[in-house]
Image (tube, rainbow, N blue to C red):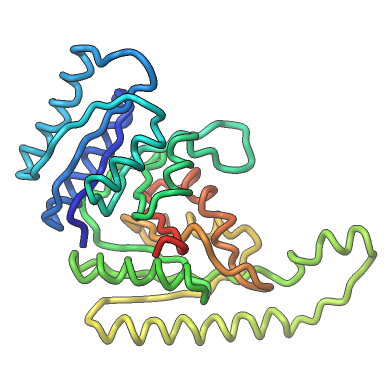
Length: 284
């Protein structure tokens, strides 16, 4: 599943939840863990080193091989350099949000890592606890390569942990796509069969995925939802299903009547109460 987990820490108590998450996943996969503290200026204080060694002790108590690195430089660049140098195949980090913004703000470092990391990034929103057990994994799909990538990763996790997969395809009503055009061009005709056809196609796709995944011995269910607020639908489904983890791609299909996952991944991370595993389609 994973062999080496990199955990960037910023020295705050809030960021240590990433250590708890890393220990849990490392315990399942046998991965080793590197705790990384990056300084953009100055030198590490004795308190910082004590903080890192206490964090390493948490993993050590869980019988996880752990090491500590303290480096200086631009945090995003150093994290990515260490990811490559150490051959890490997963990054786990806490995110930060800003109140009052309509779109998610992960924090400049987390956002830079998600955009540039060749490895999956497991993000822990401020309101999310670590998933110490993985029993249910929610996977938004939309028929795109990005959605397929997320499902593939979730399937491997399910095979390793025995978790149940819960698939969701969000169909955006056709009227949502034409609302701006109608404001400038006047009333537009929207054939109700467009939504009916989209829902029928989505159900057929979900049923096909369930059949293939179940054939591998993974418990799987799926549902099609018609919603114009895609991120809210994903987060709401995760809450309803009591999902321990959301797995999704940062790039996805943008065609009519399909969920635009690429544009909502950051919104899901901002509002989710579960950890979110993000995979870059172009890094696959």
